[in-house]
Image 1 (cartoon, one colour):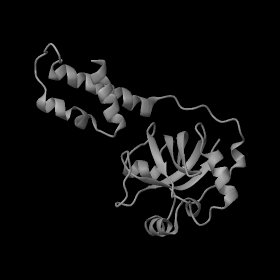
Image 2 (cartoon, rainbow, N blue to C red):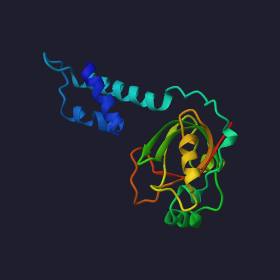
Image 3 (tube, rainbow, N blue to C red):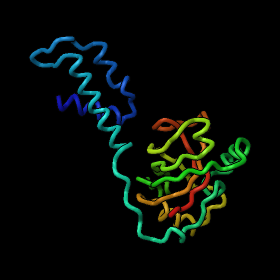
Length: 199
C-alpha cells in the first residue's frame, strides 16, 4: 500500500487533481482484494492519502523564519522593472491601481542568473481580490517574472533583487493573472506588478 500511497503523492506533484489521480483505478480496478492487488476502494483511499500528504506539504508546511538583514535596505521594484514593455502596456490598459497583498517568500528559482519565479504564502489578501475572488490567506502561489526583467531594471537593482527574493522575506506585493495564451504549472499564471520588502 505504501507504493500506492506514493503514487498519489507523485501525481499531485505532477499537477494532477485528486479526481484525475484516482480516475484510472476507479474505472478499471477490481472491487475485491486479490493475492497481488488490494481492492479498488482501498487503492483509491491510499492514492487519496498520498495526494493529500503532498497537498499539505505545499500549503501547510512551516513558514521560513524572517531574515536577519535590514528590510529597509531594499528598494521598491515596480511593474516597469519586473515586466517587459508588452506586458506593461497590456496591464496598464486593464488596471489603474495596485491591489496590495502581504506574504512570506517560501522559495525562489534562479534561471540564467536571474530570479525566474518565487513562491509566496499570502498572509493578507488584497481588498479588491478578496471582494471579487475570495481570500488567498494561507495559500501559496507562484509569482513568475519576465525573462530579462523590464526596461527600468538596472544592474545594481537586479543584483539586489536576488537578495530580496529569498525564503523568509516578508514582502508587500501586487500581481496580475497571466494573459490567456500563457501556461502556468499550478492554478493560474501570475506576474509580479510590484514587490517591496516588508517588516
